[in-house]
Length: 227
Image (cartoon, rainbow, N blue to C red; front, side, top):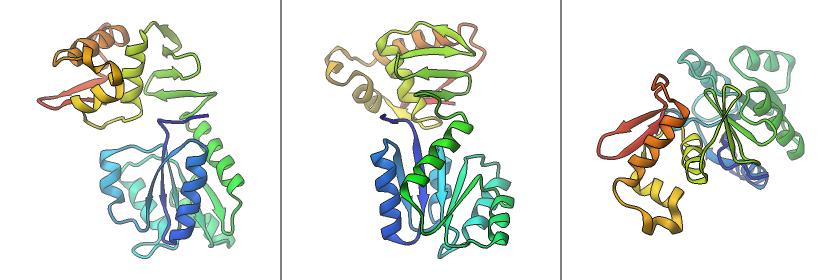
């Protein structure tokens, strides 16, 4: 199953293990972003919102669970799996107390890691039978349908594709060129400067007819952001 919108951050200082974890995640359809230390991770999280983080505790710059504890104090709620050689009971307890949601010790079996990733994503509501959730929106990727608070909303194929593009890039400013290539693609010869505005306004009227939820934030001169 392709999971285009589900991005997982992996923080692991051993490059061969990082590559192994990313390989198995990508093979299962996830997008990944790998880091060999916590450097630049906070900046990345300020710009994107991955669905899950897999974090080694033995990192070169800061102990992994201490880093997660700091993120938790700053309001980060992204689910975390610790992947570490620290396997004492006290280590396990410490990892959960500092904000971990699951714990896998090295050496690990890739299949177990993938099963735990999927289980945690289901518990957090990110995936459910090929459904993708954002705020009160639920996109069914199999049937290409949208429900809002369990109420079906009719979208055209283009509108669904546009909304899906925003949902897989939440809280990220998407410029017009990116939207044109991602949504219109080969049909971009039908595209002009007003096309995105018209399509987004039509989509907004369908998913937020009273204009109360403010899903989309226009970024003047650039594009739009899903908030």
